[in-house]
Image (tube, rainbow, N blue to C red; front, side, top):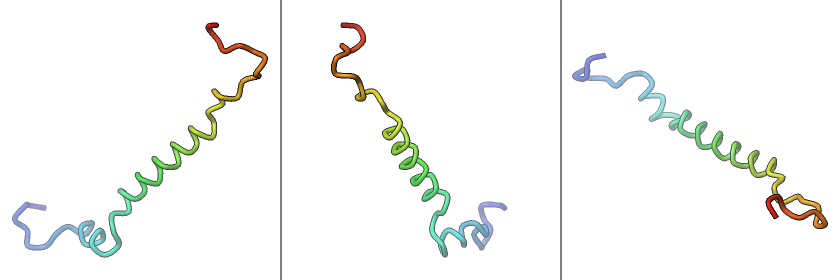
Length: 55
């Protein structure tokens, strides 16, 4: 669509009506990824009797 078109593309109408669903999806995806990474981080789950690696 040429930049001088009088009407915005259909997706702009949808964004105006429903919000930016893709931006919201990206935000939720990033939050979910961070939560999963934190939940799967076992680095602080060491046996207290075992010294940390490198010591």
